[in-house]
Image 1 (cartoon, rainbow, N blue to C red):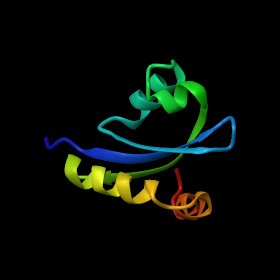
Image 2: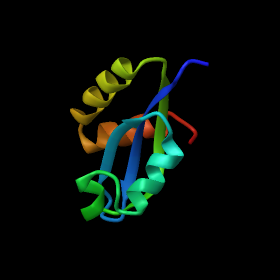
Image 3: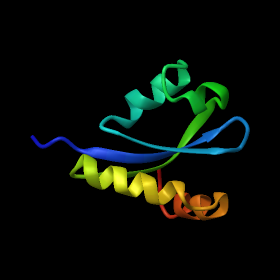
Image 4: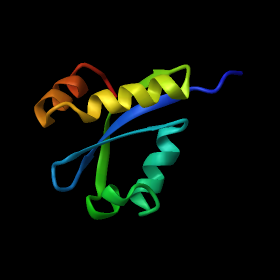
Amino acid sequence: MDKKYFVYILLTEKNTLYCGYTDNVEKRFKQHLEGKGAKYTRANRPIKILYTKEFISKSEAMKEENRIKKLSHNQKLALCSQTNY
């Protein structure tokens, strides 16, 4: 079975958005909740997953994460509204 990668966007308690990539969204979200994720999410506690998108390679997921991080807050929200997570 081929490994799959995901880009995800989290909503934080401070109404900010965090974007990352992983091979297991639920496990990574739990890490963020436990303060074991990114430095940003230790200071800005995530409250829910707003968006995920699946990729077949780590490289593609990282490229998409980079693209999303350059979007404005409103553009990221618009992207999230296009999916049913």
